[in-house]
Amino acid sequence: MFDVNSVRKDFPILGSTVHGKPLAYFDNGATTQKPQCVIDAVVECYTKTNSNIHRGVHYLSDQSTEMYENARKNIQQFINARYSQEIIFTSGTTGSINAIAFSFGEKFVKAGDEILISAMEHHANIVPWQMLCERKNAKLKVIPVDENGELKLDAVDSLLTEKTKILAITHVSNVLGTVNPIKAIIDKAHKKGIPVLIDGAQSIQHVKIDVQELDCEFFVFSGHKIYAPTGIGILYGKEEWLNQMPPYQGGGDMVDCVTFEKTYYNSLPYKFEAGTTNYVDAVGLSVAIDYIKKLGFDNIAGYEKDLLEYATNKLQTIEGLKIYGTAADKGPVISFLLENIHPYDTGMILDKLGVAVRTGTHCAQPIMDFYEIEGTVRASMAFYNTFEEIDRLYEGLLRVKTMFG
Ligand code: PLP
Image: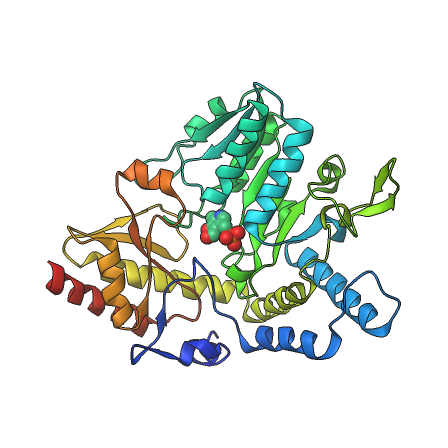
């Protein structure tokens, strides 16, 4: 059975105090905390095995290379990719989407073509496509959402046209928590021969991902949102697509042979890993994945569902509190506003009480515009949060109301 108190002991930061109060960390959508095993793995790399990968004949370089390549295989198994060369290490979700937008765009997008995204995307899945559209004189189109924060699926068929070159969509909304029915959406796109990129930044830590079952062409995520270090992320791509795409950065390791006349590129995955990669944090990511696997996704999902239900029911009893994002299928995220109280004021008072939430647009301004609001307060939960912490969030909000109401 899932024992939150024992799990919490794995995360040293959770035992700390903020402004003299025990920390209640509800900012997991922005980044997650790290278990001791991940911190230890990174320290161990620097203390025992550090050496640049792929370039040496000496012992440490061999060790380091082996650990890096084993991490790749572990991630391959974790998301059930067919081949390890389909796993490219990047700096994170943003790095992965930019890489695809540039490389895929160079190869496949021309003037008059269309790129389809949704109205609930993070800026990381909007701006790189806008930049591509500007470069190529292509058009960005958007799947609309309804008041509950669910995609208007009826619109998808007509938005996917013979001009659509790629559909790039988030699995779970970082603002609304909506879990999009991506399998159905991928199938719709495939019926018209259109490849799909899934932004898994907010799903990889909550649900088991199987890229072969999803059959998406690209799946991207960040290490730091799945209890791993910052600065490391994954670009999964089907081999047949990655092989057709040009490198997006040139430099060491991504080449096979260089002369001043012509350069021949390395094969996958190295073609997309120019320069010294973040080989240490790749090991940290692999250890984080082992940790998650040990906890078990069924346990994680079951407990997080209970947290979400408890928090939603409790917060809804507060008069004047409005929740944004009421989809039937939601991840453990609650975005809300207290009537006539600025989200920053709410966030600041909660902080004084030791409760960490995020306020603002959450890098998703277009969805704020849709709701005609400037921002929200967002409590995003993880499996190490407790029901008592939710009680403290609730009490804190009552306090905010008395102070500003
Ligand atoms: N996509 C979504 C849905 C996100 O929630 C985030 C981060 O919050 C990103 C992309 C960008 O992730 P990163 O900043 O790790 O690149």
